[in-house]
Length: 395
Image (cartoon, rainbow, N blue to C red; front, top):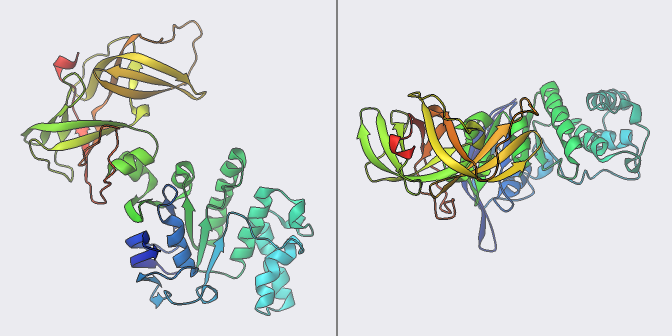
């Protein structure tokens, strides 16, 4: 069990930089995910680890062994692809046994190992079937068993669940986690699906334009985004531009540009010390905001704003409200914990109060553009915890 180190890895294709000076360390036994939109470089990075692509610069190490120039079959790394790549003319047993037979493993050892792997992926009673006789989810299990039977140090998974329907993907995510826990080797998972990466990973690397924008545990990335890209790509958020107008002790006062004079106070002791006049962005997750037609009781640690509902979307588990506050529009998620049919529901154009705990607002040292995003995504943007209430003038 050895760590994987990627040092200053870059890869170009005809003048296009797919991976741009990426460095990171993946701990032994970790389930690590590369997450990002199409074209961000995540699959190219995975293919370089597998040996299918040779980097322009940099190196890849497993433990102390430099594998950068090694061919794929010498790397002790196996890959699971989206299309399964099973041999259609072989039974499931023979598909899983293929690698061991190539290595001329003893017959009884092959039988023992294949039975164990089929049991691990819960396919032991299907061993005599052929790939065209089983479902997509079962094919993926066989592909995993075949990849693991040669005892690789690392298993690479390139969007392995993309071809499955939603319910089956959710089930297979749990199966993958169980298999990972059982075998204990390093899994490196590539996906563009935020839900997959957030639910399955020990750590996630968020990628954009060939670079790693942020890496860390899923909850850390979600709750404490270090850039506008991370905040916008992971889940959903309200991005609010603002300017620092005052600094006193551990607090920083921020005025929102388009929000009818709202002010937020920010705890300046957490990593980032802004300057007066600096443009910043507040990130506030929709599920952190409560909405009510009744004004909440004033508290020092609660932000309170008043707005008007512009749109309502019923989404089953929750309702999404679009609430206009000044020139700003807040997206608010209201979870359906209980349903009271005799209670009057909120309606379009109704005046409502928005409120949330001060620690649920985070400040990012990047400036959002007029479309609510910043195309110059920084890899070093620090963040801030927003505290205190809105100014009395916002009421």
